[in-house]
Length: 364
Image (tube, rainbow, N blue to C red; front, side, top):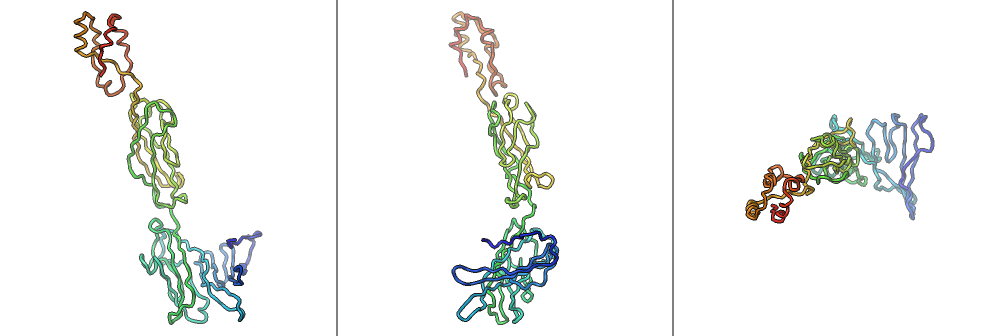
């Protein structure tokens, strides 16, 4: 059992705060720990705290008391001290104050008998960064002195101490855990503004192209840091406006349709948007980056043969008719840069009796 407390009936009509004792017994010995819990409806008012851990009005800081336990001995009941699990203190980042801003009150129930002095130790108190938190040594009120940044530090662990006027310890130190609550104050950031990828021409739908991801400095366990992706635009729009799609969660880009042809479109430019708040465009923060996708050549067109000058002279000396002029010309610059389209010139323009010369034609 974890000590969680639940209601067993409707409490919406609760007029007065309720108070009850919670007892913890250790096994197998006979030690017993007790605390009094006071509960009121949200917005209600609780009486002044008298228990080890009590919560004041919902709008007021909580009061944390150094807890006690009691145990049996041969001399009867005797009061002892022990550590207690203190509820964490949550502080939203980027608070506007005013500062110093009170967080909790810490007190010992021995303050009715003797004068107590309170102090806190740990990173953020007496260790760098110093004095992010401070405590009134007499009243025990603990404050945060400036806005906190969760991306700089997400939590603090302090210890609260209580001593008498002579510096003697009157309570065991208690642990205070302060958690900085994340706010959506960071945009997703791409590592680069331009990404380069490639895909083979003629690729089937669903073929992997590339991956684009952005990092959000906010808490990725909350919507503040959960990034989603979408494609904003594609240039050119040929053969269809949506040749690619992106996985909204992983950032993987794949082809949507067939029809990639390097001879028609050799490069695509797409704009990818990353949005936090799980892609909510109304509340999320966004950023964009560019993907340049090159369509790589696939040898799907055979090259057209080229007749060398020496071969022509040799065939002419043997009385073989000269092939058509188009059959002699070298490939054009355009053809050299891409696959040549199949040409029927060889069959249509060369006489049948010239077909034997094909054995001597050179292909670069």
